[in-house]
Length: 285
Ligand SMILES: [Zn+2]
Ligand SMILES: [Zn+2]
Image 1 (tube, rainbow, N blue to C red):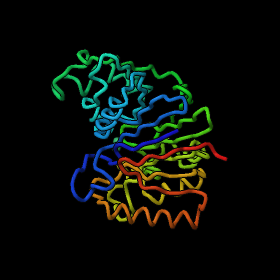
Image 2: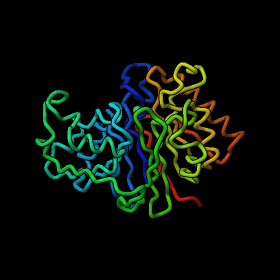
Image 3: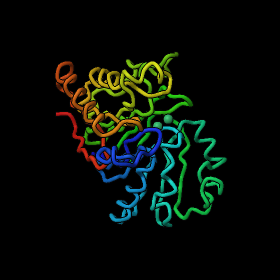
Image 4: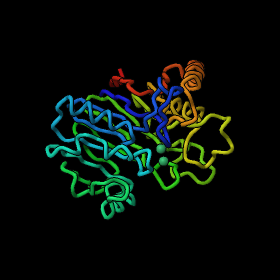
């Protein structure tokens, strides 16, 4: 499984000199399964560049998409995803959180002439919304499982288990230690993520952001490392970066995270996700 980050920023795009190394595009991750299936995680502004790559590859097959929730930073790139402007594209949206799915079906939020000039029925690509039926289903060579996350308005996380044994967990936007009752506890998430080759998790905050941002639906880096340790993930990718955080601060977060893991979970490696980072996820040995 090959995973490439096209957008790693949370909340709002942050172009500019202070974010040039990690990147300012909002969340979008390209996953290529072992059978070549293209699976796109979220559709923030990073999806524009992925669209360029898919067009350059002359990709003509189905493009599968998993959207965690419909906050702007996760969907705003869709109108600029080049493949939707081609008739030969078939884009399949897999179960969104059920409420969001219903809303999208009846009232396209983005393509309604108010927020974007083209209406949804004038998009040339074939767009399919798969009805949510189950918590587990097949996409290409993988089995996808979803889980409810702790986020205002709801969000869902995904686990992708490929036929060759490689596995990925994508958990954003999620508050591991929410102030009220959790939709899913850290223990349940550790079980869900058990042995993942790559755990991508929202790590927007550090202790200095608290208590002001408690309840906002994002996690402390330290809680994410604790989850990675409990799950015994091979690699944890810190993701959905705080818009106010510049490159130098993200460098520091990476150094601190790696040194914490060396002491507390030496089998787990930390990376701070950045645009263009490509990771090969292998099956456990
Ligand atoms: Zn977000
Ligand atoms: Zn959100």
